[in-house]
Image (tube, rainbow, N blue to C red; front, side, top):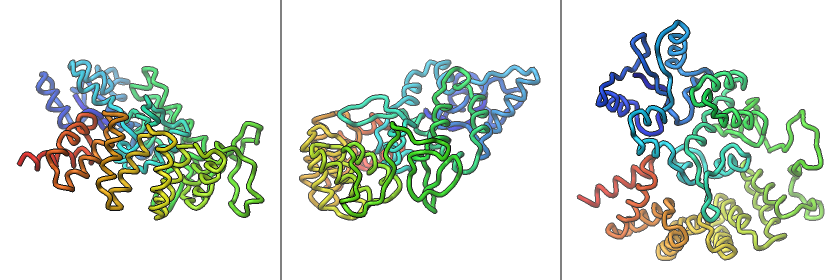
Length: 386
């Protein structure tokens, strides 16, 4: 048995050990003796040129030559071994902040993916979306490959050769179409923003592609913020979307203006207050951000992300007691909220209150046993035992 791509439930070494414990033989290479190739489900097993992994290509050649070899998905592999726990791990759900840590991608990019339809929340709890990690990892990998210049047609051919897609999972192809056609879905490198389909540098988002004619239902075009007399007659929702576009394009001043216009039109607009707070924080205006986070939870007491961001900002500003209160309020609303457990545990540990922090570290790990946050949680629990 051989493995290709990144496994979502375990490492290749662990999968090899598991194979041998069940009477099989694990190999790092594909040969005529290989009877099964397992395709990992974290992202996709695609090389930098967009073609399927070397192991997958070799397996296809063996099959075409009449060899007996099965290509199966990671989920099928776990099912064959009766490992329902492993299957649950590979399908674990993550909040935007957790995805940000796992994918090394900023939270506002992840939110932009959701708005563009590139990733879809599996469930929402009081405005807090939970995402399938595999879908987000797939989006990141396809985005990286398109940005590097791999043609969409090459990627589509490669995706159609993967077991999950062959078995009817069409979501990766849908993600690819979204990436190729929507200019607002971009990737960022050391030099700024790129439009994935063409590799062109972006200075601002254009709501239409060059070959699309404007229609009555198209979203308003971005406009410069000059004098108030020239501001278009947009709704609060229009201004909010404009703010999101400018925020994603790193135009923080313009985003602040757009979100301010949204809340001027509709003062009781929690999400606009929240995003305005995010922009102000990134601009260094901590006091202004603090007030806007408070405004968000005043208009929606159950706004989980606003409570956790409020707690993080209060921690940064040295008000540990108020920060702990904010995290606890979030947990009162949603007792299983992993982000709040993590931040409260971290705050309590910093204060030397390890006994109080322990149940929160454990609660976080129960929901999220992987990634840098999980590693830190295990480290603190280990030190606590010592």
